[in-house]
Image 1 (cartoon, rainbow, N blue to C red):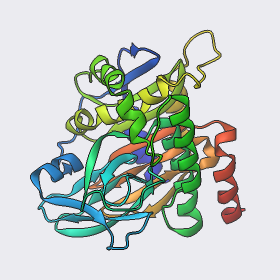
Image 2 (tube, rainbow, N blue to C red):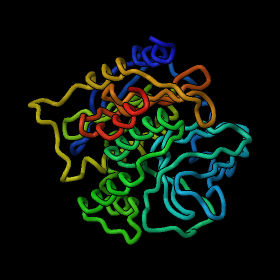
Image 3 (cartoon, one colour):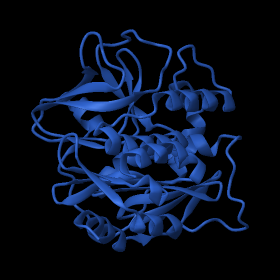
Length: 327
């Protein structure tokens, strides 16, 4: 067992799973622990509000899979995997979690979530109150992990991201001239906000395991309770958009699945390491472990961890990429 695995397991061993909270098909199992780190960085929302950072296209011509974060502040900026950025030439989502260093420019890897627009709606980006819906976020995470192994880059399967958005818009009865996933979130905003209101964080909560219609789906945890409180509404909206989807099936089991199923899978997952974009080291779960996602190790701690329980069919394409590289 390597040092990275040990660090992740140390965090998981400190976890206590609090009383589950359920609302309209989405269950949150709050993860709590007694000792948490102080937040020593700004979230993207905070940095944009303080005007110490801005996100723009990388150039006048732009590049679909990359954006530029200019951090003029004295604190690092935390950008969340799957967090949506709206504006400029087209809306994007973050491909990985990044701790962008203070007083530096950082090129950040992204995916497009608005296929039908390539013209400036604003000079820079604002942060949306959401992350990409969890089913698409999970598949993108698997492809990003495979791309790191194959090329050292952090690209998604962009065509699959667009296909997922098209299916989601159709399933939820939303229309968008530019095929923007934003339309689905806006059309169901009141319904999604109800999930946020009914799944409030517990004391000392630093993360959660989520189940959609009884099926354990994903895990998210942070180093700080303050970060968790700030970003959990975005994550809840991500899962809630899948929870309200009539085409999404639930668990076939008579009883809901246990959060331990995913926690145990994460504990056993093999990990691939890569130098992070920004501070720290990217720890990516090996897709063959049946877990998609990864963790950011920085400042001698796990700053963020995201993991999704992946079905064999969902991993098939990304696993082929991995096998070409390693077998």
